[in-house]
Image (cartoon, rainbow, N blue to C red; front, side, top):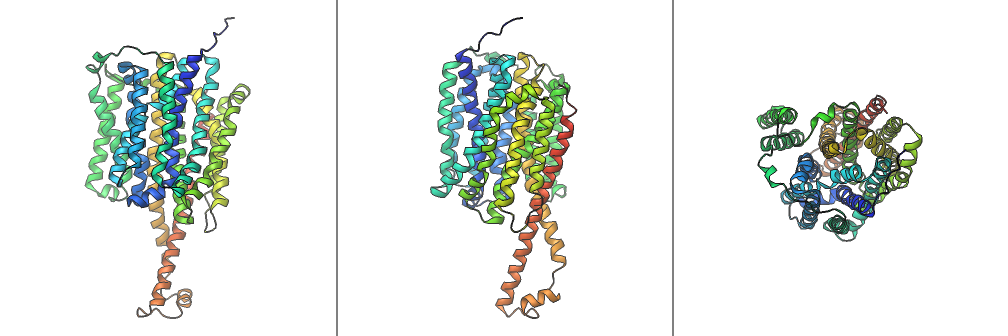
Length: 500
């Protein structure tokens, strides 16, 4: 029986340095979520427009993540991580200086593109630098980095926004960014560039991917405002993005210049795990966007109060993450994944029946329960997905897995934002059908028949309409939580179909 060689200090430093990058990218999403209503207000953005602050970053990540393995082959892992981290830090500072929504979205695109390499390469370092027996420990550390980001991001971001300004939250990425630069500079050897590969790059496939993924996101974000397929722009964009994605998939499967190995999705475990990760990422990012907006807009919470309400979401994950390697040794991984999805589904179900009194008393238990389920999914699903893959496939596997997680986040964030707006209008109309100025309860509230010359009656009627809309939003947010519950419960069933 062969004895595994001990893991070198430089390998551990490389892995931990990569985790700083993972932490930095995770912090960026969660610290922004706590201050999102304030950012929307300061930049003059509506609820739907504000979703672009999150989704612009995610879309840029989605477009760049599949290119990560190819960029590493051309420029080397060391250079890609160093440049990505440095540009990410510059973009973070630039975000803090953004004067309006358009500039903020443009900078978030740059920040997302630069940070796109950090998560898949952190994942790749775990697979390539550690022996198989240490991969569960590496995945647990990967989950831990995300958990710390989720615990610290909302609370610190909310406090900074209340005490100073939302612009200060973007400086939180500076310290982990510097640590990442130092770790990679010391622990990863420089290797020569292969610039000749640029001439053989699948530039048509890259362009098709950018157009396809970007177009899908534009359709999801703008569809509600443009009357969906009643708009010639949305129809044209849907056709263009669909054709571009078809060409992208064809070029990667059958072209001789493919930059990402889509055939990995044919592997049973990797394919099922990738679909589950798409839903997991979607619900994670989507609910992180939805909850702060609900607490701020419907319950009147300040940024600090939103942050405090979300602290336990990260803390419970922080406490559970170190236990994951032990559980992986003692429990069936697919049962861990199925249990995690069921627990997350239960957390969403707790938020599916909101009323006027549903503030932290409902949201905090909901996010805590979801936080309990997340480490079970993140660690076990990642280990199941890469089981049996060679180290040569690590680059494409990590890029695909990370891309689908973030693609799910971008798609579901946009979809849930649209769902809330659409369901609010539906519920407003239904509630409004039972209210008219001739109904006895309405006349009693108005103190008699409506007289336009009486300002007091007009003011009372306006308050009633505001109350109707508030109630409609409560029902719409409840619908969004219920949609998440159904999707996560479905993933729990799918997880049971995976092979050990």
